Length: 229
Image 1 (cartoon, rainbow, N blue to C red):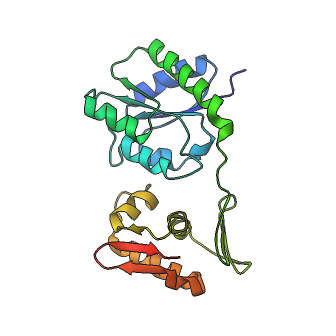
Image 2 (image 1 turned 90 degrees about the vertical axis):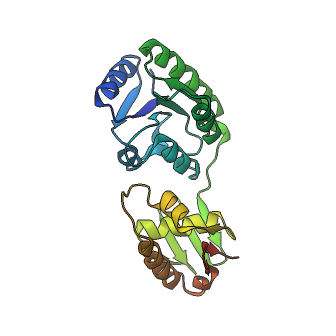
């Protein structure tokens, strides 16, 4: 029995229905999302493959793929881009992001099914080599990526989702400066409009919550924020 799960992300609802029907006929479990924002609200780590349209609304397929590449839980999920754009530059952009294949519209369903089969087989072969990090620590500060909890000297601290993701970004990339725009792209992936002030407010709250390590979050005027070790 085929137990592989696929997420189709495309703003053309008719195309999503066609792909879902044909993939399910082949035995795959298939979910659909009509925008990258909708897709990012799902537990993407459970899928064996993403069929991802490039040109969509506020968040493009390329932007979504870049975001997924930053998360150890989703970085190795195979991605096949579906797009009406067929220039060499676009194809190179997709492959540089980490695409496993690139199918130009219009396409035949038989072609899609054949390519999906190859990419999933390749992904399942390589899957056992990837063991994601489950915990991030800095001295007495500890983040559990499994249950999304933060502890300071063994005491759990209540965190919002955004605060958790900001701290995770910092601990995974210590001493690297992140601009506000980059933080918006990586942390606020499911939001349409977010003000720079929102980042500043979250940083202020985060500094207070992590006590003595608040001083490690430094401001680089004109550039952004950084967690210094």
